[in-house]
Image 1 (cartoon, rainbow, N blue to C red):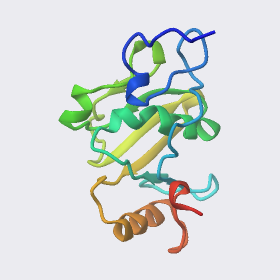
Image 2: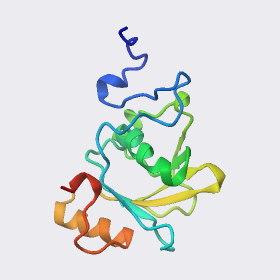
Image 3: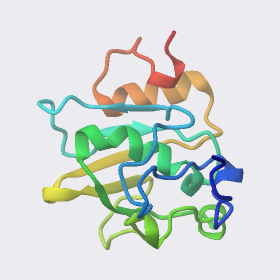
Image 4: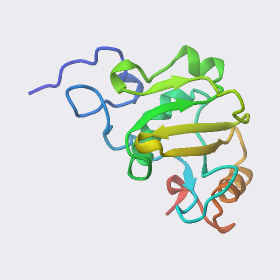
Length: 159
């Protein structure tokens, strides 16, 4: 049986959809593993819990994949707060059926930090690294934000 065509063009853009009939989480496995490093749960930081280095300037197009890999740590994502760029706002890929609120930054939210809110008051603060950042510098930022050893590489760069 052939699946029905997408209703909103999401599949053509590589976003993938939830295998659930209601379109909510958990999302299918990431189409491309996000470049992400997180601190260990028992290694808290006052500033950030890790870092994400998106591949493009359209951050919302990569949110499904990011949320999919955060689910084991955060549970279902309820809300994402960030100072979205114009491209991300104009090509927004998270919508009401996904069950996630995509908001602008909170009043005292630092620039370049994304807040991802899960169920049970779980929250992650991610440093968002500019996609155009040189690999060596981005890797250093990922490692610093996650408390990883300088030689660690995000999952998408390993092996």
